[in-house]
Image (cartoon, rainbow, N blue to C red; front, top):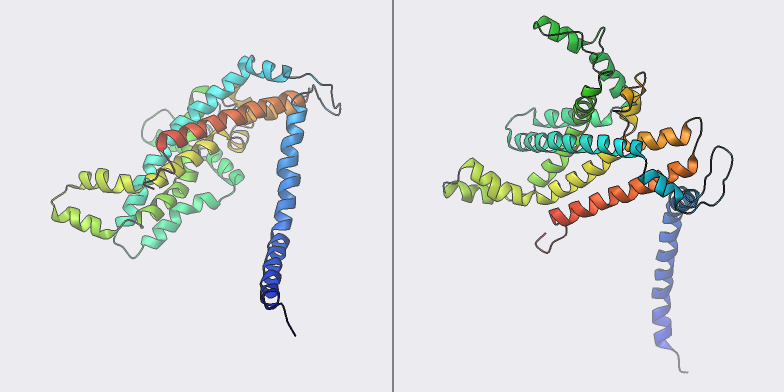
Amino acid sequence: METNTGAILTKPALTKKKLEMVTALYMAGPYVLLMLVFTIAVFVMGAMMSLTDAARLDPGTFTGIQNYIDVISNPKYWTSVWTTLQYTVFAMLVQIPIAFVLAYILNNIKSRFRAVLRASFFIPVLINNVVIALLFRMLFSGDYGIINWAMGTMGLPNNTEWVKNPNLVIPMLVIVSSWQWMGFHAVYFLANLQTIDRSLFEAAKLDGASPLRVLFQIVFPMVRPAFTFVMITSAIGCLQLFDLVFLLFPDAGYVGGTARTIIAYIYDEAFSQQARFGYASAAGFVSFFMILIVSLFQLRFLGLGKAEE
């Protein structure tokens, strides 16, 4: 009797393949569902709302791109953009170089406490933003802050209102965010530094290369992927700054508007007395495309994904 041997042999394989596919879909299903509901659906609804004059409980009427025109022509929005860009530039100029130096030292330090030091610098990342904001508000308090007390003991002016002075908004934000995130960035640099072949350093030492030459000709080229990742993620995080502003300057009304970042501006427009949800949604999408352009420019400028990487 003639039998279909090929069909019998391939049937178990097909069954196993289908089983793996069903298992994968079953495991990924909850995540995909949550993403569809809380990311894609919200994104689409926000885009639709940005084309209306929705406010409070009123769904509003279709207004086209009028909200986008109003956002672009509003000086207050561009003031928030300028504040955010200032903070982003200064925060990155402080955080990234110090994080790299910190990682470089930790990578080369010869001590039994090296693991403890690495963990200690990462701890601020694990602390809740509310706790960090309250901590620094107490440290920089004009009445009982340790900073003013320390300045007084050194004969310096000790009556500075740190969280109420418009000229100190950006420095305050940079100091607090740098303390919180430098250890986080250092972890990525440290991970990349540990992948560098030690024989390269030994060969450079035999050739008589100076430490600076080793740093610029071996270390920097090898850690470029880490620099790219840290710069892009840091820029995105800085451009989305909100909770630290809201918690650090709660009684100062965003210090006369000088501490109002882009996200804080969107929040104010959406949850103020007028509750202009349509306008706030348009401002959110304008900011989204702005952040996207900055990220694409960084990718192009830093060259992530080139063939040599």
